[in-house]
Length: 501
Image 1: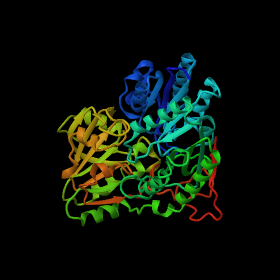
Image 2: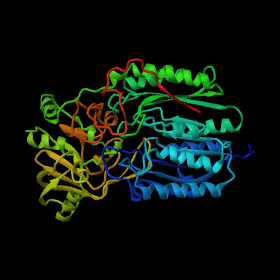
Image 3: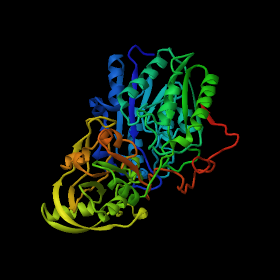
Image 4: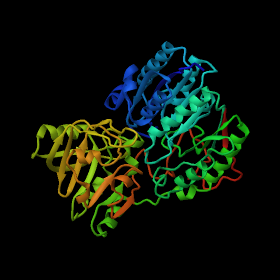
């Protein structure tokens, strides 16, 4: 290794949905984070911030390539991925020679005509640097880890928190694994064991006693013992439709592949035993509203996880809105809907104007029909806010031209673009106060707990149409073949699929 190792750094980080959502184009990355060359070196938060801090401390030379990150959506269009991949790989070629490569990725991205985006990108980097230069990738714990990813990377490490709070720390862990490999302190042997378990994130937290958090802690207890260098646990993003999807455990040892394979297998079987606990109880919007009206005070949370922008949905569902508009509400109800045409109509009308709009299901109409809404334009804004914490800490979010449309007790946040929900930044930037609401519609399977959990009087998980449902029992997968839970409750003689390098 050179006295001052030269480390190439670049990646594409987003999560994709093959059941619905809008195709991801280049302008999506422009609304979030798209950095080239030295612009990457200016990052001080998130996974790249963690990587850069360790590289500076170790006096390694960071060779910035391209970093592109955006809110989840459908697949990346072929022109979008071709441009991003082409730029990144071209910059990598120009950076040669390099001693190592760091790729901050998600793990559940797909591109049009390229099912396994991360595997494709890692393989392309491998073809440039050759077989001896170590490549380490960082992943979301919702990654779909493929054989191609394992085959071409020397190490893969995942975030360890959900809600995601440790992107910075994961960046630090990833670069330390790479530097230890270069220094001869570690010879990574990696194995990933998967079981056919598909579950939404509703019971997948690492903080509130959920089953996923328990298996993560059981697995991490092995880390640092008997040559075990790193363990990552994955609750696969279930809204892809790819062959051999499953949840599982990835183990990296110091030059002991047999141990990595055996430990990964044993932990994956323990994971499978928790499958029934990962299934949530769900209610129709009408039943949830009726139950919520019997709860004293508020806010009562209606978790419409099937329309989660953070999972790739369009955010344009009005399933919960329809139920609330029909109810006799004793206090405000806050509902987010992505509908650029309705937002534009409100902006044309102006604050105080009364409007009548058809709202919802116009971006991704497969999941329902619009609802007619009469109301008053209460507020207008450009929909810009700044994330405080999480994977985009400090990054500006952009809903585009947005409006608050008041219809009786229902306050509707009408946005032009879908955005990832971390806390309640979207409501706050439009002057909406969840603390005084009777009902709050949250379109995220997990982050609502940190945003509203301490003050919520009740929480109901909704069973609504959409590409990010709370249960996978009714998803008509095409590429994924049975058996898989929850469609198959038991799999006699189950043996995990073990991938290794």
